[in-house]
Image (cartoon, rainbow, N blue to C red):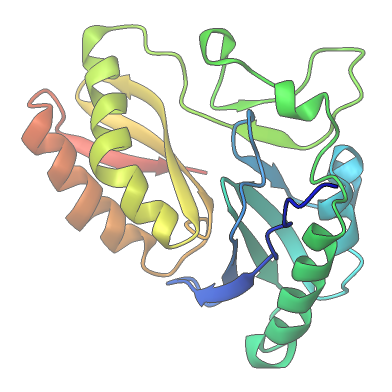
Length: 215
């Protein structure tokens, strides 16, 4: 007789600095071997059954999935207090049922040594929609130092707020970053970028003079 007990799924919500975004955390890994994934509209979500179901809520604008959490954006006409409990319970039931978060092919998307761009779409002929989010491949030692610094000193704090900041390019002392998840459109993102990330990069990568956000 199989006596293995199935771990109950627990979900909870965390507010983020972005009033339009809420972070929903689960006590299980949602993406085992995939980069963080972003779905900006229902048509993007063909490869993610979970994202497709979330878009059925009329107030959900976009879905960002990374590790053990999901960041959702809502329409302005709805307050989080009115929908958070409903979303949290939906996610708990969905994950408890064992339904797929993404298609199997999506979990194999973009091995580390094959990453080609900050936002990569599947190759022509593939059936994947949406976008995987990752750093651009470094072309110089300076760019590698920038990415290493972001990974070590910036990413953990940003992920706590339900977001992600990735390296896009470096030229003439200027670092261009892309803000995703709760960081996208956040009112405090400019302060985070200049007072936080720029200061950190200048400290550990002396060649950096300025950090800007790319739309």
